[in-house]
Length: 279
Ligand SMILES: [Mg+2]
Image 1: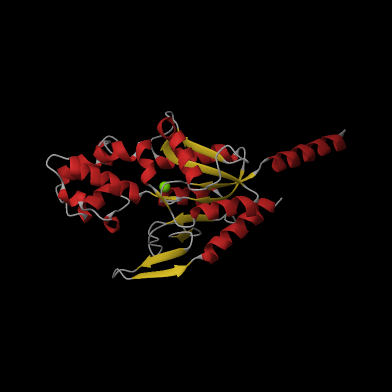
Image 2: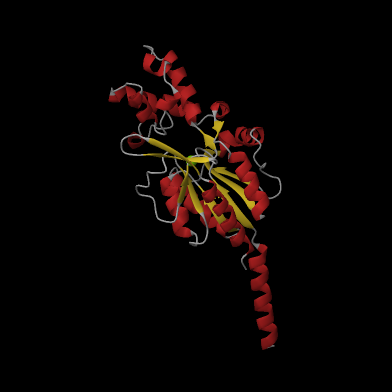
């Protein structure tokens, strides 16, 4: 009887472990897609239609665009705080998604302006093929508004398609926390019940730190970042990339250094593959 119980315990435990497929989690915006092109188009439109017209935004150029709309406006030469709030919204006032920029940025109509981050489709395909893992896209985009457009966007750029071969697309639902960090922390906890997460990529510093703290140190975590020399507030054990071909480091004087980063990306694939093969 005892042998049978031990056998049953070992069998069920082994089966439970084996039953969990390996998976790699990819964020979308600014991890696989460059959303600065989306913001560029949006601010051109706002500049042209605002009364009075905002010529600084009409003539905005890509290098002036920052992850934060407010920084982009200041880069364009707009210094009026009230006007920046009107255009960009203010997180402290809860107007980020309802102001002029947010209404368009979070709309599926503007996803078509995104560019892919160089090399991203090939890297995701390699991650799927070479590690044998499932691909999970975990994004803070609203599922209510953006699911079809996001699926079309992934298909257009040649990423593994959601719904095929274990590839999954998770978008934010109405019941999820408005905080991206809380939403993704809860989502990761739920994913860990069904998957062995063997790698994660997210451009958000807070999200990357969260993945690093919740996953074993042997599991690779990458944060895409336009300036890999900037590690302020980033936990140790997180690699940074700029694109899937090269890294950009910008020093305090503004000097840019561009170097290949294949060692980081090949290391990620090797570590993830080893994690997926581990018992
Ligand atoms: Mg992101």
